[in-house]
Image (cartoon, rainbow, N blue to C red; front, side, top):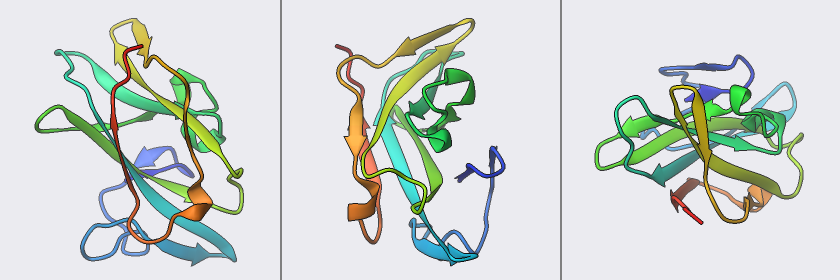
Length: 133
């Protein structure tokens, strides 16, 4: 899971994951945190990786150098879990996926994706398909 507070991937934290590895809410120092899993299907080539970037600091504030790297899964799926402090998240969050290669970034086409994080409860997983236009 990617911890936006430290900027690092963590293998396991019992305070952040349930035993079935599904994202959940938890409170820490009076703030409400929630983990969201993002998945996108894109067939990369050797040397490419997929990032997620968005309009809030937890998603890099549209700066690909601060974007969140996703992990490759079989079948062309890329995924990552991101921990958000819901007290600091605006009502609507915008994001996109980016292919990162050697010395280039290919932004996903189409309009920015948007999500209202606060309206979701329970297991949250966004399964997206790459938008080329």
